[in-house]
Length: 457
Image 1 (cartoon, rainbow, N blue to C red):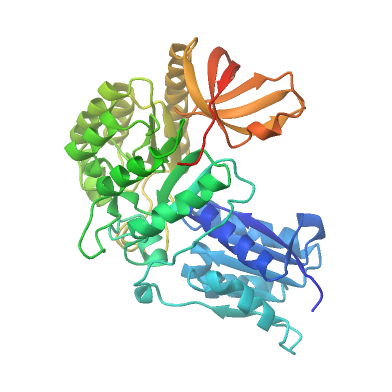
Image 2 (cartoon, rainbow, N blue to C red):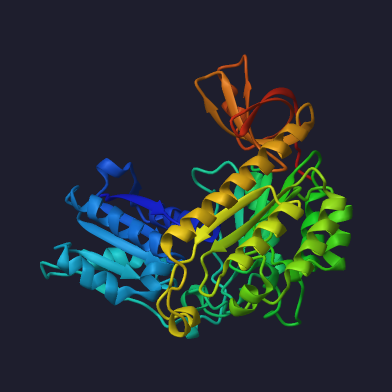
């Protein structure tokens, strides 16, 4: 078989990005050639289904790819896992042929499946291959040698979710919580360090559930101490970032780790979803707004320089004006300075879809979204102003226009700094120190203070 060119597009979460990197590496080792979109023969979409908008984006991409006359289109990810027949029916209606729909388990066998695909003799070789999430009992160890097209290395340490929030599809798509043992976590981190990465981001579908399925049972904070110890073997600096933590999982043991860690990034994404206790209960969220505020205040006392981010859903069924006002109060009265704001989206198969019908008009939802956007924009600007003149660690992500380095600080601020060396590509993936000078829009200009070198232990 002649070499076949493929293109991968990833939607959704950081876990999807890790899984896409695994697919790229696997296919490349099997002789497939990663290419640009316009020259690809195979198009692979790692999809998301968290919102209706995400599924719409998937269909829009596939319709665009049809114009390239592809030999094959592959859809995998959460949309494929949960709604495979819906996708296939839509594809038939759009006259899209040679469409392969793979579930989460099957995406890890993609090289084998694609080779078999070209042996099929029928004109339209579309098919679905999906395993039941109830069968997902083992963590798929996605060992990656190099995290392609990324300057920061993501390590997937957990998959699945046991929470079953009333609005969320993820447990139906990803199955029960499963964990990568410490030994394999450290092995992956070591490989990334050998490849020159100096920021390590631990990610999962429900990161705080790491270790609950292991024997003996372990806690995330135990893993964090082991990672801290491992990174300490190397000279210099690293950044250890966590993708997301539930507020109920930030106990005294985590705060103790955070207080003493040399590497933990002052950047915490802690989903809120609503500031109304009534709505939180309907969502099956297991905390109150008062508890949320207390925990964030404890973290803020340790890290006043941190970016505090959250997800917020507006327009959840039964959300009245007072409920939304409660959300506004929590955002105002907390250290939050970064929000992902989602209009509520009914997901077929969830409790919310079965139990409630839409009650919040779309124009009200849009108004509430704008109120929160304006509020968090002002808070973000104030936070950035407070950072002016500070020196922060940052990872260099890219070199722009031969004389401009683009980076991300430890506390999640985009920064651009000039370089006199047009061959500064060697700094990409490296941790440097940058003095933050002026706020431009929502990023900083900065001065490169110095680089921080590493050596193997």
